[in-house]
Amino acid sequence: LHPLRVRLCSMDKLCACCGPIEPPNKVSRIEPKTFLANERTFLNWLAMSVTLGSIASALVAFGRSAEGQAAGSVQIMASVLVITAIFFCVYAMNTFFWRRRRIRRKEDGNFDDPYGPLALSAVLLLSMGTIFASGVAKLAGNNYVKTTYF
Image (cartoon, rainbow, N blue to C red; front, side, top):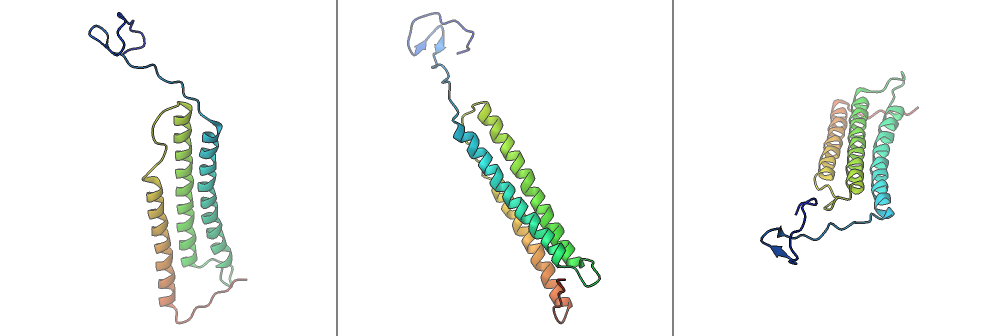
């Protein structure tokens, strides 16, 4: 039943002239904890991203050779982790704004994303696999492991 359409009869549920009569839309109240839960989830995803970025910068800082330049494999590892951290940030922002828009519009339905965390897990697994393969290739190329931390 269209909101501007006038009801022509006094029937309760079904009328031949008006069609099915639907109950008016409920005015739903969004509780503040819904907004706070969305922000808390956003901050948790960002914390994971900052952790990955910190590990990448630690790799660059502690993986330097005696000449002061970072080794090639360390650069690859750090770059892969930074790219993964950027993926986490973009996903966190996108999900936060998508949920916030739905909350403000008071839309019904699910607020979960079944595919995003799965895709991020795949990206993280791929980046960890790349880092592992880079480390194995470095070990296979050297007869011994020599790392200078300072």
